[in-house]
Length: 459
Figure 1: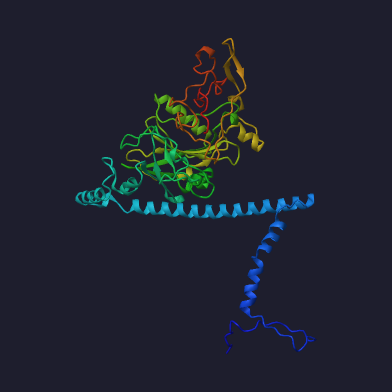
Figure 2: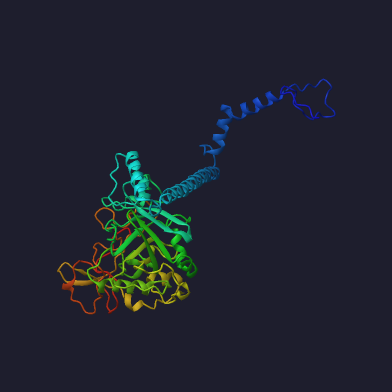
């Protein structure tokens, strides 16, 4: 059996064969360790490290450059590692938090409870949260979420894609949750939120319910929507579930669109679709026609004038700057089955994209005649003249860049009014213009697609 070493036993060394017999190796292990760290972390050694690592006055020019490059590389390495650690823990925290809320919400099923049980549970909840004023008619399942944040508006689910997220709505600060999480803390993910103009009251949903969310390219947030860009993704999950505080609704996807958020990406034109309410059925159906024309997937799902739609909006700049990926779904009709015959779906090879899409991929734009660049502006004499198309601010993951609806700008992100798309002009006098700049005016007649107003910055 191997004997335990004594900590003070003289250190083992290899003795030279010609070494004198009187040579004594009295350095103990403890002394060796002590001497090592003492020498390593001494002031003299620290000065030596600093001198060798940072440029000195007496160093040659080449030596100074070498040290600077080494120092910069070291700093970048530390910052990169720090970001990875921060990113990983932020990612895990979000996954765990959403999992917790999904479990909490699903723990209540009012359809399986008697009225007296629901009444008792509400009494317990109000006793637990005495300072919270719960809305009348709110579902029991959202009580805990609402107690944490009174901006809670419901939840969005796509079970087949393993997607769940609480939904928030802040009418006084429309884009508050662009860079804030459920708890009001800064987060690169933000939290999916509903357009401040939308109504979520039971039985009184807006004609178009719009939800914004980040695409962070890490399978969280609205990154899952990118799966709908492929036919297999649509067939996998053709139905979306949205629960408001008051009711559960289901929606059949009818279009998946890749579009622009800046006029520069389509030679001065901007397709306007972030509209919550419409003044007429013809305006609504005109928008539906424009959406289907641009849809990458032919779903076979019809939309009628009395239907309501859901719009899921996120960034997609993998092909061109300022790109937006938008998924559209219509509300399940009364008595309609939630089952979808996906065998009818096909990829739309003739979908209409912004000019930047064709330019980036080296393709010919078959709709080029519909987007001839034209912008009208008054000169110093008040006469209407053509000028170059304007360019809007492209959205990025920079918190300083605003998303739809910040400040005095409505949350549409691509328009300044809730007006539905009007028909394109064929021959229009300049006096009919309502703004000093109309980058989206077209020279040919087509279905409603471009709005007359300029795009709001920061879409």
